Each structure stands twice: as structure tokens, then as C-alpha cells.
Amino acid sequence: MAAFGLLFLIACLIVIGIGVVVGIVAVAALTVLIALGIISSSAAVGIAKKSPSAGFLTLALQVGAALGLLAGSAVGLIATLVSDSSGPIAIAVGGGAAGGVVAGTAIGWLVHFSACAACRWLRDNVEIGGLGAGNPTRS
Image (cartoon, rainbow, N blue to C red; front, side, top):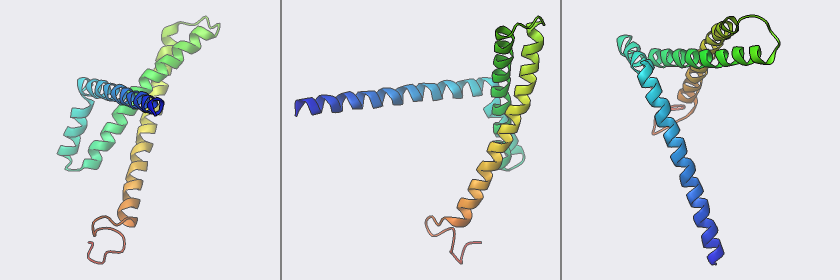
């Protein structure tokens, strides 16, 4: 019985440790987004247009572009270092960054489109608290 208790304690500590790490990563990511102004500009767009969807679209596009810039730059640098290219590294990194921004923005647009489609499907097909699918009083 003591062995089971010890295993349970170890499992609980591992789960708590994973939760702490995930929380630290989430706080760090949020701090970076706030420092770059991505959160505040997305909120400003949502408030100015009086549409939460516009704010989420802005957020998805900005986060996609920022992550695409980083990923594209890294891929360009790695490709230059791995290949026996005689060209300057700056051109490869710049090209990778440009491609990454385009791809990241496209992915951000797709994420927003998918989230909106999922929200519409949930609104039309799932009943929560008397509102939703099959409720004749729903407007």
C-alpha cells in the first residue's frame, strides 16, 4: 500500500510540475505579445470596429506574421548553413523571413476562418442553457 501511495505522490508531483511549466510558458508568451503591442493593437481594432471578431482576426494575423517571420528566418539561415551556397546569408534569411511572413499571415487567416466556422456551427447546432439549436424563441 505504501508503494502505491508513493507512486501516486510521484505522479501528482509530475502533473503539478508540468502545469507549472505550462503556466510559465503561457505567461512568458503573453508577456512577449504585450511587449510587442500585439494584444493592445488587436484590442484597439476590436473596440474601434465594435466587433470582437475583428480584434481576433487582427490578433491571428499579427501572431501568424510574427511567428512566420521567426520561422522563415530560421529556415533561411539553416538552409544557407547546410547547403554549400556561396551567396550571402542575409539574402537567404531575408527571403526566408519574407516567405515566412506571407505563410504565417495565411495561416493566421485560416485559423480565424476556422474558428469563426466552428463558432457558427456551435451556435447553430448546440443547445446551451435554453439557447441554441431547436429553441423556437431564439432570434
